[in-house]
Image (cartoon, rainbow, N blue to C red; front, side, top):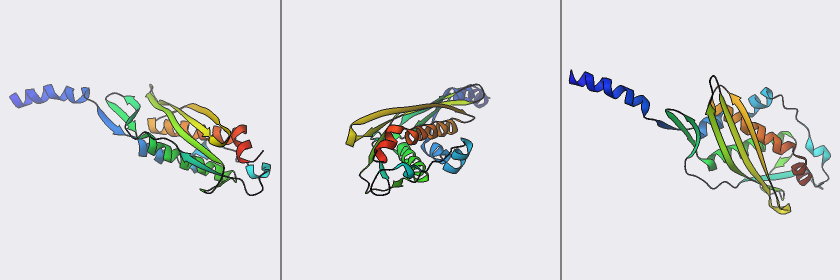
Length: 187
């Protein structure tokens, strides 16, 4: 009988204690270019047609994020979702590379056109029937001394899906930014 009473008393404590879940890979898995580009009805433009570069326009995107400790990106009691910012940004860089490639900009390590990206914030919050997510990053172009921030708020049924939507939106802001285009296209 004592064991049953102890079990009944311990059961609510299980729900009062939280657990930490790593979401980096779950968000990265949701960064499916074909699905997101279709869902957002992205109209791809051949940016190379606007280029004044002597060769095919190219870019290298560098992950400048150095944080590797757990970063809280989701609080939905009793669960706390964390990401590794540096690993998350490797996925963002890969997604950004896809977008530039689809716009006919060559992505190569030998390019002289350098974009550095760093995560500022990534947060998902639980709503009544959905999650909201906020993503903000910093882009630096060392050659011209330009630093800009981009941010987006998106919603979805799951926290990691909302985060992927926000990341998608930010990467499209970068690709569509006239200042970034002018730099890459030698204009």
